[in-house]
Length: 364
Image 1 (cartoon, helix red, strand yellow):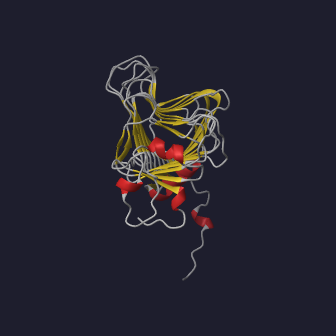
Image 2 (image 1 turned 30 degrees about the vertical axis):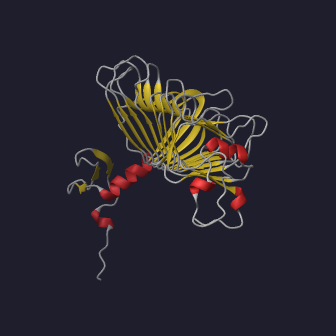
Image 3 (image 1 turned 45 degrees about the vertical axis):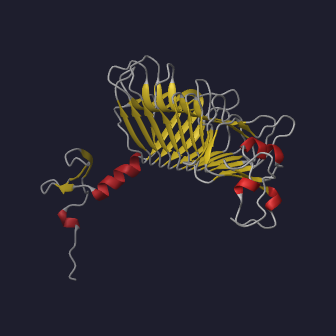
């Protein structure tokens, strides 16, 4: 790697480094043993807001924070590859990131119960927001736990946990693209791929809840709730929701649930697959206890819903089926029957008003 001009704003961290090193790369090739810091925190302590820290492959057993008391740092923290650049402390939160920062190509693995993976540091609020790209997080608590953020961007990330893969309570302007949110449902309390998605857009994301235990508490892909500042209001576009629970589970099992009057879930072109048993009539793709759920072009089981579901696509779907599926005209009555995908269920019958005498054949 070659750095020119901005080398004083670029810092290196490597397992072959030393915290006594300067941390910069001013020559080519980069000599990590002589130039790099050994720990990520040492590089952060030396850096100034706006600097870039490159973390070379290795497992870094440290608790990293940009929220240094009295001097929070806004930084670009960039790993080489999330499969090889990992922050994995023996205990405690692996990484506190600050608003305005970017975290890229890094994995965090947290140990112990009650500990989250990625978290937001306190003491600074930037309209530039916080970005996680191509990152991975595993935790027995929350894969990522960010609250009251002005702008949050998640791209090509995987958040996995025992409890909630993601908790973004009171977050505004959330934009998630091509991310995976997973929960294994092994916690002894409610568990979700996302508990509180905030206010924003999730595009081409997948949500997975897979539990193998029977219990009386709820499990689901996404739960929209009322937070202390804002109710969750989300657009899901091209997303997949998969919930797998064993037979005999007595708690709620669902794909998406709204629980408060101000919560809104708008689902466009989404796919649901919910299996297993659950409370209140079994496992559900959609549950609206309070709030609003609007679906458009989604594939789900209409028998697996609870509460009011607004179907904004009903006329469009019927029209599409009329164009693509079988239509048969009764020769005696002239009635035209349009059939559903099964080829048997009639979704519309149309009888032309004209009789034969009103038709005129012209020579062509």
